[in-house]
Length: 393
Ligand SMILES: Cc1ncc(COP(=O)(O)O)c(C=O)c1O
Image (cartoon, rainbow, N blue to C red; front, side):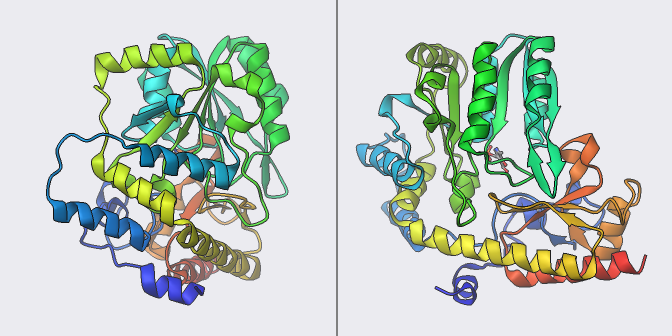
């Protein structure tokens, strides 16, 4: 399917549907009528098979307590095996209602109040909240930027772990917002450091399926078996197939002792809920959504290049991070905008709603994050308007 046909088939107007991205601007921005390129969900309909699976169940008309059937486990593990080369054992899987919930639960189960938790920044902002809201000590190690690519400062990472007696590393892989897909070598170095200092690892792999053609995603589960004892991996089809509101995700726990501890914790607080529609949609997506996903990735790449071309032609002092994964573009506008004028100019003049860099780390206040999972026309409008306003400032 061409990009044009994909857009024609799957792009939908979402305004007026209670969408946070399109209808929830009031809370964070000064104007409700901005072009929304913020919240990380997509303006595309799910694969037809997913809609059909849900429609069939709606037709059936009963939504009582439900089991997760064998066919679900098969679809999930085959997806992980075929797409990422990972072998997942059924016993490892725990269901949750979201990835943010998952890392909060794990922080609560496997660390104590005042324990230190380390994160690599800039990163998805609920990482900060999860550490602070659970009264743990937040330790950050900043990624280094070179030639529009972000790298890990391993020396700083290890020094901070030692100095703060860190107990847990909350990792984002691929990294939102900078778009890095961490290599096997980088993961090995990170996990060796964690192993040396008895640091547990949570690897949030929600963006695992958005990998630029030619790049390879390495799951924390496939780096080396010796890391599995202190590892928790978080996945969901919610980002990949635009199912966020169906509230369904996985925690993978290879270590049996940790599974026992987690189960004990959940008995106390969450009574292990499973979202029926989340399960049905995820299964259909994993069974029949692959072609849709590959086409969608082409749209994301196309949009990234549209943005990149406009920036290199019209905004030469802006710098767009090289994107290897995710559907997010990370753009440095600090040569054009001061921290103080950022929101006023972007909202009042450019008329776009984006994620501000400072949400991901104070130091990134000169950046914006643009959601590319929309029709190319929206990216063109935003890029042209950005160029026009910043060049006439
Ligand atoms: C790294 C990362 N983790 C988790 C989430 C949200 O997951 P959920 O909606 O399942 O809580 C996002 C959404 O953008 C994300 O980027």
